[in-house]
Length: 237
Image 1 (cartoon, one colour):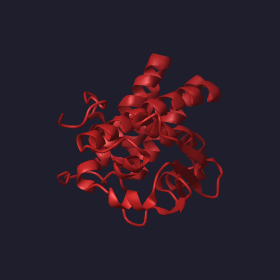
Image 2 (tube, helix red, strand yellow; image 1 turned 30 degrees about the horizontal axis):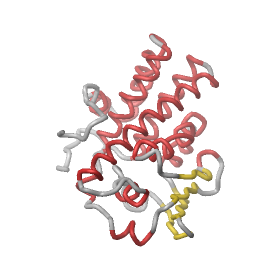
Image 3 (cartoon, helix red, strand yellow; image 1 turned 180 degrees about the vertical axis):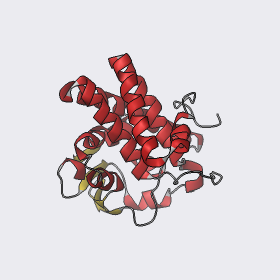
Image 4 (cartoon, helix red, strand yellow; image 1 turned 60 degrees about the vertical axis):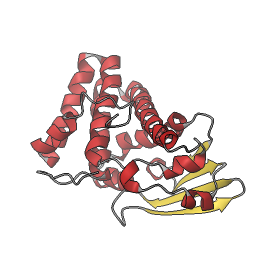
């Protein structure tokens, strides 16, 4: 996609992580820790499934099967070089991924937000995989934000050599972080407001105010610019 000109610090996984954690914090303030966590996990499932369905639409448009190899090839995001430290390795009938450094986890820890932030990691990977193809099997063994020494994933019926061969041009699949933050805020907000009504709306507004205070009013307005976007379809469709 074309380069976006920013009047604010360019978005990255850091802003995405903090936006979610601030939403989670505000929701739990109003709904209580247990009920708030349940609402947030439902919201992340919906958000992740929408991402997975868009990935599937891209793969199908390219004539590719909705197998786990395509799932790994059609990811919608990427981080800056060095932001992640990970390793992928072949196992019989599967690919194992280990993540030793994660910018979401780092952002939460550095800002004392791992408590609310970690809820995202309990749901997101399985939700994206389910949205892409519920017949695929992904095991989430552990995540750093929830106490594991490394985030560990088993992608069943994937082949590491085929993943490399099926690699898709990233400019065709990766969406800008503005899109991802806008999607997060809208979709999570829809679930939160449905569950909590006016209290949910207040939670979303408080989280965005926190985001604006940290990153600027222009950044907050960019998040809001996606409120009319249909995230169930491919952009431009």
